[in-house]
Length: 415
Ligand code: AMP
Image (cartoon, rainbow, N blue to C red; front, side, top):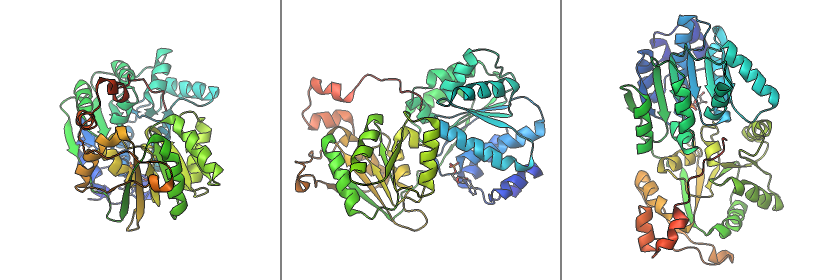
């Protein structure tokens, strides 16, 4: 189905056309009519499916038709990078229309706070915000959201993972009760459904089947203890023809360690984590997209939603928490009939996540143990398990091991 078959305002259609959007993606075909009809929606869709335009286009259509000077839509997102990306897309679509938007996120300079504050008080048509920063602005008073007609929660699962649920509920309390709610999430665990039940009103549900990774991806699993991972990484990078690679780590403190180790080996590696300033992060991302260096090391929270594809390699320094995340990450290689390599390191405590991934892949991937041959000592033994409980049983862990698996939940800092 094409965009010009929708009953969109012709000036918006010109903007959509100018962005070279002709054919709708499956998620757009399924969700845009629901959103245009004013219904609540819960949709499972990952980055790369076109989910952003799926809600931006109907929001902009509504902005043009209502011609009010008040903020009518609020989009909550987990990271500032995503907020900026969405703001840029709005700018593209709005070339021929009079629509304003602002991205509100933390981590910038002091003057950003004042600028954001002014924009919030005077009202932009669409506000895109990270929950923590928006809540901070709201708490300091003056900001009114009396005219919001639509709330979008984008990457809802990530926002909950990052500990934003209370902030989101605080923000929602200050919105008009009568509004449309749209929730997009890459994964749909129970906690997301429970959260959706608190917010959405008889939503329509759209679920895109998780597509299998492209055949061209060479998936490699390596068993390794945490101390073996960096030398193993160095070995694999040396023996591979790396054009561009993202190394995902779930631990912020590993980013610097990996970069330091690779820099010693004369690799040009750069990283992004929440420790970098906004400006640094933007530069690192821009230079990577422009192929000025080959190795980007990033926390997985931060990398979600970043629009970077066509990588020759993806390396999971640890196993993604969610099987669908794994599929999504490795899908950033091997685009458009090319080949790519996806490497995953599996330590002992991540082993129970492998079954879920293999279930989605509908195949087993060989677990390679090469650390011994590299002089790094024996790799951990692989024990098949689908749950933490099963894993603990098979590896003979007693109560003591609880500490290893159930660390107290910390509220991560806003990325
Ligand atoms: P998203 O999943 O929203 O991050 O979008 C992924 C990429 O696809 C972005 O670069 C979009 O600009 C692009 N895109 C989304 N929908 C379309 C479409 N219908 N036609 C062409 N490009 C699209």
